[in-house]
Amino acid sequence: MKLLRVGPPGAERPALLDQDGTLRDLSALVDDVDGTLLADAATLDRVRAAAGAGVLPALDATGLRVGPPVGRIGKVVCIGLNYHGHAAETGQATPGEPVVFLKAADTVVGPDDTVLVPRGSVKTDWEVELAIVIGRTARYLETDEEALAHVAGYAVAHDVSEREFQIERGGTWDKGKNCETFNPLGPWLVTADEVPDPQALGLRLWVNGELRQDGHTSDQIFPVAEVVRYVSRFMTLYPGDVINTGTPAGVAMGQPEPKPYLRPGDVVELEVDGLGRQRQELKSA
Image 1 (tube, helix red, strand yellow):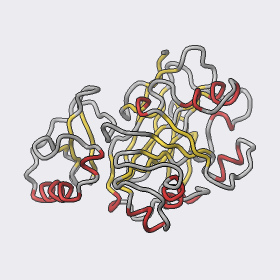
Image 2 (cartoon, rainbow, N blue to C red):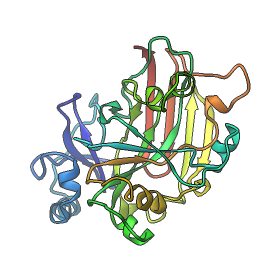
Image 3 (spheres, rainbow, N blue to C red):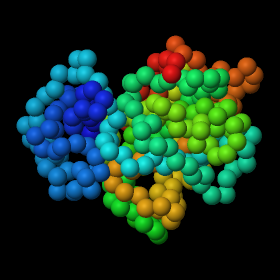
């Protein structure tokens, strides 16, 4: 299934995109697409049955905003330097263990919402990523099979980053990762049964129509199952939590001088195979 949330910020309603590309209203069946729903197999089965029976009312998508596909996210866990190509382009050694950091859940916006360039920023950068959405509470997972069984689905994420804040201003990466609007997510949460191999997905990103990133999840240093298993050793993952799994080569930071960092007025478009496409226009904060 392709689950999503539509409507104004803070007032999104649950929806489903059917096989014919028609937007369907889920409001009569569920309150929201969130951790409560993702952990409830019986309700998800009812949603699947209703979708298959063709009884869900259609929604007019004209002018309808698409919000983040998951509501009430508890935390966003991010994996840094998780592609061989990205580590190489930034001149950093391949990590021996996953690099883990957190983004605040309030950085998450819809896939086509405006992204704000922070005040004083000169190094705002792009990062297309595969996002994992957790469906079952995960603690101390032992095997890859266990890890994948705890995944509800996948989505497109844009891990927007301010490199000066991240690298040159001291402390941890948090200052360059948690600026307002720095995690567009969606358009859909595609349930795990529709993504049989998360290591077989292409990722692409364009800036002002120019292809900047063209990567593949097979280049990940730590695959999806290993990431979920690893993170579960250090923190409890709850239904509705999101893990951004890193970005392939092609970010602005990895380009020769003058590096083409983002500016107000730029347009970024990105996609992951089978998971949909995003488009953001950048404006000043």
